[in-house]
Image 1 (tube, rainbow, N blue to C red):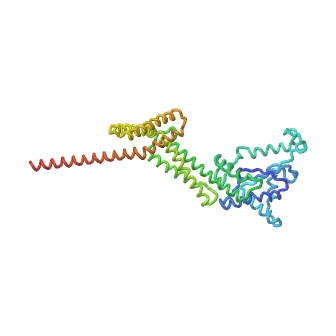
Image 2 (cartoon, rainbow, N blue to C red):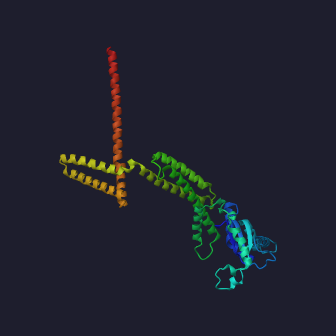
Image 3 (cartoon, helix red, strand yellow):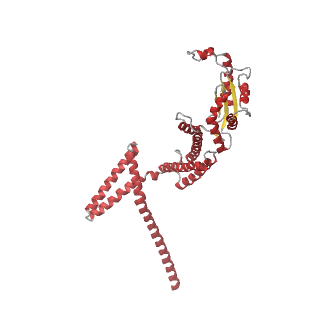
Amino acid sequence: MREPSKPWGPPAQLPFYLMQLRKLFTEYGRLAMEEIYQKPFQTLMFLIRDWSYPYEHPYGLEGGKQFLEKRLQVKLHQHEELQNVRRHIHSCFSNLGCFLLPHPGLKVATNPSFDGRLNDIDEDFKKELQNLVPLLLAPENLVEKEISGSKVTCRDLVQYFKAYIKIYQGEELPHPKSMLQATAEANNLAAVAGAKDTYNKGMEQVCGGDKPYIAPADLERKHQELKEVAMKQFRSVKKMGGEEFCRRYQDQLEEELDDIYANFVKHNDGKNIFYAARTPATLFAVMFAMYIISGLTGFLGMVSIATLCNIVTGLALASLCTWAYVKYSGEFREVGTLIDQLAEVLWEQVIKPLGDNFIEDTMRQSVTNSLKAGLTEQMSQHTRLKTD
C-alpha cells in the first residue's frame, strides 16, 4: 500500500499463499478500483527463497517470471476461488514479477551461532543476491510512489503512515473497507497539507518576516487570491472517498486557511509602527483626559470625581510601566497581552469613535463655514452691482 515495488516472500506452496493474499489486498484493490478506476498498486514481486527446482525454472528473475506465469494461469479445472485470486492479482497490480533464490546453505539453516559471515553462505545464494539487490535498489530501478494516479511526496507519505498506523494497531488484520477509508483519509489530508503549503509560501512572499508592512486592504485581496489558488489545487488532486467525503476536508481547508490568514494579519499589524504604539498612546490619552477632568472637577469642588480620576490616572500609569517592562524583558507576556487587549477595547470603543466624531464635526463645521462665506461673498457682490 505504501511502496511502489513490494517484494514478498511466499513459501513454495504458492496457491495457499495466494489464498491468504486474496483475503486482504485483492479485496482492498477491488474496492479501490471502484473509487479511482485504475490499478491501485504499482509493482508486486514474489521473492521465493529456498527454491529447490532450478532444473525446471532457473534461479533469478527470468526463472521466476516463467514460474509465475505458470502459476497465475487461469484454468477451467481450478477452484473458482483460485481463479478469482489470479484475476484480482492481475487487475490490482500494474507490474508483476518473481525472483527465485536458492537455499543459503546448511550452515545458515542448522548452525544456531550463525552470525552472518559470508563464508558460511553458499556461493549460489550470494551470486543470486548480487542480482536481486540492484534489481530492487539501483537508482534506475527505483519507482516513485503513486496513489490514485498522483505522485506521493515525503509530506504526503507521513499522512499515509499516520492513517495506517491507526488501523494496524490491533492484533488482527483490518477490514479492507477500513484500509480503503484510511487511504482516502490520508489522501485527502495530504491534499490539504499541499494546499496549505502553497498558501503559506505565497503569503510569506507578501508579508513574511523580512517583508515591510502592507495595507490591510491589499493583504485581504492577496489572501483571497492565494486562497482561491489553494482551493483549486486541492480540488485538482485525485482523491478517494467520494464527493461528500472530500467536502469535509475542503471545508476543513477553508477554516484552516482563514486561521492562517488571521495569524498573518496579526504579524502584519505588528510591523505597523502606529499599531505597535497604540497601547502606549491609548494609555497616555487616558492619563491626559483623567488629568484634565481631575483638575476641572477639583476646581469645581467635586472632590470624589477628582479622586476617582486620579485613581484611573495612577492605574493607567502603572499599566504603561508594566507594559513597557513586558516588552523590554519578554517576561509576564500574559499580562502584556491583557493590557494590549484592554487598550484595544478602549481604542475601538471610546477613543476612535470620539476622534471620528470630532473629525466629522470639524469637517462639517468647516464645510458649513465655507458655504456661508461663499454665500455672503456672492450676496455682497450682488448688492454692489445693484448699487452701481
